[in-house]
Image 1: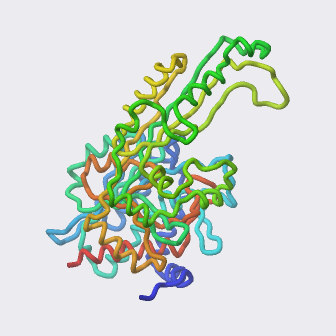
Image 2 (image 1 turned 60 degrees about the vertical axis):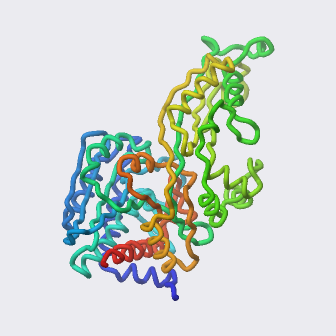
Length: 458
């Protein structure tokens, strides 16, 4: 079996008229800010996507009932018994503000040394244009599709998919029946293998805050007066031990343990380990689980309690000897199947009361449940086999990732087998500065989707 080199893939991309057309569409998409967190550009981008899909014959619905418009674009096969594939994508991105370093304007698609750069080029606008390119290439060559293809695009994925559940309830009958749902994105790992995954962790985020006095107090009273900062730190410390295990009653009792196949897939394909993390992030503290098997089990299949940020007291230049009267923290728990955001949040509240931290104000901010897919489904096995023929370094098949998205919500609504794979790389820097994808990977993803469409010709 021969595989195309990176240079050959780039050459094919540049010579491909359809790919070049939708590369210009991607350029426009990148230039149009669509940031749910800042309520910027959502209707504009949804409308632009509607135009792009309508212009090539898709049956388009744009619903603006809620904060972020919901876009559905359907390509229908003439075959009366045709199966249906759904592409789930999102057109919103995280911000690209001054807190991040970018080599160029993040909202201008640029190319350097075989890579595309821009906010959303991987997460997730590039996946929309690559998949649409594959559809258009197939139709141009064959005149008709052998399978119905639906693009389902939301605009609030980066903010816990606000209102998606309402849209899914409204359009459930229109989206079904379906035989396969291909998730928003994915990437190649550090070994060059295409990761094909079937789930993600959930999340519940919350704020902790406390006021210990009406004003900050002179620190000479530190021996006899509790400060807000110490009170908050003690409350946080009570929720987790030094090895990262959560100390909140009942959490682990609800966790759905992985089955043997899921454990075997992680053991076989997962490449994450303590050494890689040390090199990748320049770690100065030890990892919580060093032994590989325990590391992987904890990383993929167990919940995690994390502090996103802490604020208290004086942090300016020099010294200000005070006992802070206010302290706050933003926190999260990454969830696994068996745990729901509301139940975990309630357990945290009970824990704080039980340990006499009743002065802590606990505020729920967002939540999503977790999901694990059956990676042995025939539709998913077919994709795995196709990918092996396009990716020289092979594939990495994992039952879940440690990231978070609305997989559980969509599965509850549609009940369709779901699988994630995409055009990113191990250093695509999603959510960070210089977000990027390789042109070669972008074009290989187009080829993989086109090959998938061909399998429905029979």
